[in-house]
Image (cartoon, rainbow, N blue to C red; front, side, top):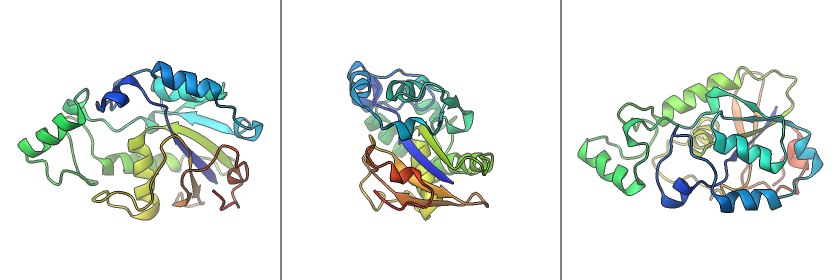
Length: 204
């Protein structure tokens, strides 16, 4: 089963480097304008589209032309608890002050929130709900969920930057087998590449 993961387009909080988590922030006007100018090949729009329930993912899918996307709660962004709404620089200071070490990695647990490992666990459970008939699925979700997918697929512990530079405006291609194991196929897939939608494809 081919799964294409795409991060939502930027919001005003993204531009401010403010952590959103589950706070339901809408897209920036510039992001909406960019999406409206993006013309996806028909093959992409003919696939099954799934989003998180937050409007920044639903609006991204809709503006790209996916009118009938399905929201799935399991694809919601990592819950940052008491850190939501804070600037990234403020969070780094609080991590040190609260002794939440390591300051990165799978087990960073914000007060009242969840860790990346918890996000990875719920993503793994969600994969088991996908029916084999779903040959290709396009998922518009969040950076935290995609990072969890990369960890699940490659064993990345998030202690260091991921081995490949990710362009968060482009899809990442994964393959899921009958046992719901996840394999990374390619990062930074071009919209023009419709072959990546085929489960046997290894392009990008």
